[in-house]
Length: 477
Image (cartoon, rainbow, N blue to C red; front, side):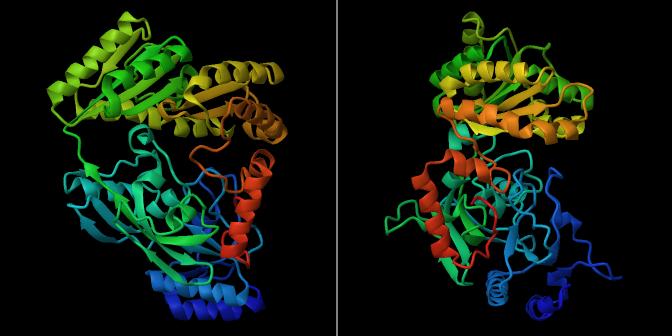
């Protein structure tokens, strides 16, 4: 530890207690901070001066005030499951990681108002279970739900598998509690669905990745739990057919269509290779669609609707085969196939990820054209295409050619591959970040591909709310 930071560490220890401050270093007794300093993809590794672990909002405000007084920057961190390097410290060894993990309490559940107020460190799966215990639903669902936190979900405006019906994290939040860069506490934990009193501060902080303020609690929307859910896996010969199937499913099920995921054969092939114990009920096909319908009436009504949809899809030759889950464990098994793709891809080696959004109608042309352009430029590359077709969000990832060192391929070709992919995304009216955020991975892309007016407005907001630049510097902008 540098001598100039000794006073800050002493003050933080006094504020948080020894259990609330982890100090790294080479001496015996120093804490191992590696879990806080390395991102989930093992791509960004930094070094923290210390990890502050406040137990309440007042302590968060105190940490911010102390860091501001000493000119030391803060990196807010939830479950550290992000994919764009947005919550790990830099290599300077001078930043404080502010972990919200101890702030995980449920503050209130209002069943009549369909709201749940929780602290930012609450694990997403715990929030889901808290709602379910009252026969209610919190619909945000993603692969990292066993370890990601509500604060991180909101800071990155997470998406997940049910955006088609319920929207992103932004749409699932009614109010926030935030500690500002000045160490002030804004209590905006409203459970109101209508509050037209000035600028929408809630939406300013959601998706800002901890660069404008630190989310310490949130009031979330709940929904009546569906009476029944039906899940199926369907085989399509082309992405065009999958898009047509989506239109048919929307027409038949309306708002009951809660999930519509698409996976190419290579992505499911990786699952077979690395997780052979996971059974895939259909023969290999160019594309697989995982669709789910929720029903508020009855299981019989849901089944009749689902069977009618699949029969119509078979008759129209939009699908060649389908497997319908007959039980909750079978439904979970189908979803587990989809959720295992990122893990299988990680087992295969480092890869070049693209979390992109496109108009659904443009996705087939984008994929066919961009696949061809990449194959021509980099013979042998392998495309891991999967994602949330229902809301236009693709995880369009590039794996190195068979037998080539993945890390070497990434370091040599990532920039050129990104240029091809993002040029095509923009040409098709899309976005270079759909649900993962910007972090440090896509900072340059944001500036290059967002309008100068938009970037200017963002910089003005950052300057107004964090004039010292102490909150998560080097992220987003």
